[in-house]
Image (cartoon, rainbow, N blue to C red; front, side):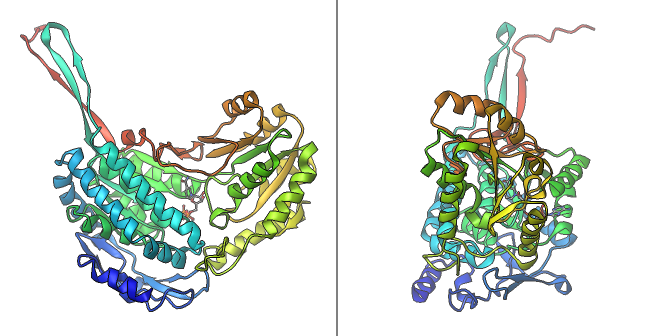
Length: 503
Ligand SMILES: NC(=O)c1ccc[n+]([C@@H]2O[C@H](COP(=O)([O-])OP(=O)(O)OC[C@H]3O[C@@H](n4cnc5c(N)ncnc54)[C@H](O)[C@@H]3O)[C@@H](O)[C@H]2O)c1
């Protein structure tokens, strides 16, 4: 397969042969030496070499590559490249933009395995999940390619034959700032709607996972996008704040934690720039006694253990109605024990590595704390809260852990569980399992969360808007509505008669 990959690389003359920098795809043996900054159609090494940072392979703890954070000069160059691309791209028709985006989607499909492997090596999730992330990225680009040609304004008739019309115009250079849990998918979920609307983008991945966003930038270029359409600058908070403050940046779309999201909003406010914020969560999953138990257990696993639990929308507070608690716990523990944990590049693995050692320690300290606060630890990753009193105070029930830790809580009535489910400052997602159709919709109506699931959890079809209530964010990604977050309306008044002058 090494030969196949090499052959695939040779068939891609425009792209930097990343695979050539990789000796062999197995955990512990990958070195990435190509530069990871990308603008104006080229990969760049940083001018500020002294600031190099190590990037680790989660599965082994080995150094995978070095991050070269971009400073002010480089951020300026990337924004300049994006401005220049915007000039061409924004003048193309939606159909023309769509053709290039569809071509990019084809290239992603043909390089699915290579991208997924790089995601695994840099992020630690299982290859099975990484493939689905690549698919989601491709579907998102296909979806917005489809919408690109539908963007249009309105015609409004005014008195005396006069009229007005609206034009849906792009914003300009948009900035995307990503988290480390879905590196390639986040880059696609942000760039696809931005580009479809005629914007260009400078994207900054998390410094923990810098590898795959640049592959996406190269893919757009290979698909025929103008130079500078999607640019990638590497770095942490300094680079991020340079982007947010940049006078030529029109919008910031951010995925990450609540504290950083607040800072982003504050920085953007200095330039009165719109923001999209996809932040954290502490989402509830409500399992009623009339549920199909088998599906409810599956739902709870999907709500907690994807991507080693490092998912913003995870339903980490699993409320189970008292009568079925013993059965539920038995089944969920049994199925959790059976999860194949191991080398994320192996086909059989279902749970890989947490993103790095400090994060692992943080997650484990939540489990320790829960023990001290009186939780029963059924497995390292399933906490059973024992009394109602505990529930209101336990740290594991209040704070986002962002790891494979499910807290199981029992409840008696619908009213009670709704009150407890909504008792959080966040509101990204929520789920309900019940066979009672009336109850399902009634409960969902009362849940204060942006994405609600009935009898399933954590599915994210790109046709459907995704985003949070309360402190979980502002704006939406995916779905038709996101077009409104990456474009602005211009209203044009047209006078067909004389000016009715008051003076
Ligand atoms: N709602 C969603 O769609 C979603 C998706 C994935 C992750 N998340 C959330 O992200 C968090 C985990 O990701 P993380 O640890 O990478 O989050 P983070 O907030 O630490 O970092 C996110 C990004 O912001 C950058 N950044 C940090 N400080 C900055 C600053 N001052 N100015 C500009 N940029 C700055 C980081 O370099 C990184 O690229 C969790 O809270 C999770 O719930 C949300």
